[in-house]
Amino acid sequence: MKPGAQLVVVANRLPVKQIPDPDNAADFVWGVSPGGLVAALTPSLASYDDVAWVGWTGHIGVEMTERFRHDNMELIPVALTEDEKELHYDGMSNGTFWPLYHDKVRAPEFHRTWWDGYKLINRRFAEAVADAAAPNARVWIHDYQLQLVAGLLRETRPDLRVGFFLHIPFPPPELFNQLPWRTEITSALLDNDVVGFQTPDDAENFSRLAVGLGLASSEGKWALSADGRSIEVRAFPIGIDEETVAYKAKQHGVTTGASDLRAQLGNPRVVMLGVDRLDYTKGIDVRLRAFGELLAEGKLSSHDATMIQVAEPSRDKVNAYVDLRERVERLVGAINGAHGRLGFPVVHYLHQSRPFEDLLALYRAADVMLVTPFRDGMNLVAKEYVASRPDESGVLVLSEFAGAATELTDAVIVNPYDLNGLKAAIMSAVNMDPAEGRHRMRALQATVRHNDAVTWARSFLAALDAT
Ligand code: G6P
Image (tube, rainbow, N blue to C red; front, side, top):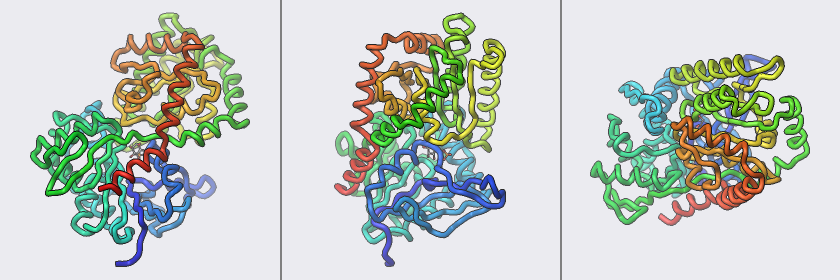
């Protein structure tokens, strides 16, 4: 066996993705990959030596397949053709698993061709991992796009210690059991030594499922037994690189960026902010409706309140995302049409991916942060906002259906399905007594600091080592 890495991380995306070069359409440059997975995992691996990361470059066409080094890691690209991307990424991952695991906020589709594509690509990732891993190495598999990898590795590389972490929610068996391939997915997940989830509820859902399908038996609260092996099944709530975020948020460029921004908006009394991938799970539409109704009822006025919504383009080949975009843009247009003034729209909508420094300036400029998903694994934007408020001002409005609500109990917690409740929560955030706001923010900051990205990765890998 040839030498390889001691720790192999495998995720659908590499931490960097190929994007078209603005100066030369035929070429590409590297940009940071989207989403919370990369945001948390990248800093958490900084202190480990000898790490390889297997993933997709996010691009079709100018494919690069050679390994390369980046941030002290060996990056190993996995190439996908257009057809394979349609079946594995747009289809099975984001047309079946994503909605099924997010409480069926949209109807999942079940197609046998997607499933075949999913198996094929999981096998390709597993082969790349088997090739990259040193004897007895640790392998850390991430997320719903790669749930079969452990099963395939157990056949070819039984020497490896293999763990899986799911970044999104895991549904109750009552929903999961609709999946035609429930047995294959559950068995492959049981081939890991550790299966980690964002919350204890997610872990319990999985254990209940595995036992209910007769594929495992319970070995105490956070352990299962299958095929004579023990599998640790529990929550490892993911965190952010709190220290770096807090440090960067205090820098001069960010502070002045934030005050320039408020000036550009006409220095309103209240700036509200949403930052999300443009995803139907995030509740962007519901928060716009709540804001629109508050303006219509005169509880807020365009002279003293402004909302900024950054919606990062996402999965634009999947129909449900195309529909959501139309819905959100129609709502923004309607609210601005009814309540904006010349030169002063009341909702500022950016369908763009912004550099992190720009997001920090937005976080610092925002008095109220709206994180209102219908369902979310964790939601790291909520944690980033908290970490970037050095003066302890600002109020976080947080959906009870985000994993973050399990930890961030000092936020203003809302049910995003209850429009009146959401409106009341927004008004209580807008009118919150500053002393109470600071008290809550201090508690939130302590939580985010205590459980950061490094702590998360260490505890997961320690659990893997202990198996
Ligand atoms: C979430 C998922 C990640 C995914 C990211 C971005 O954070 O948990 O697995 O990579 O969204 O989505 P995308 O489809 O662009 O990779």
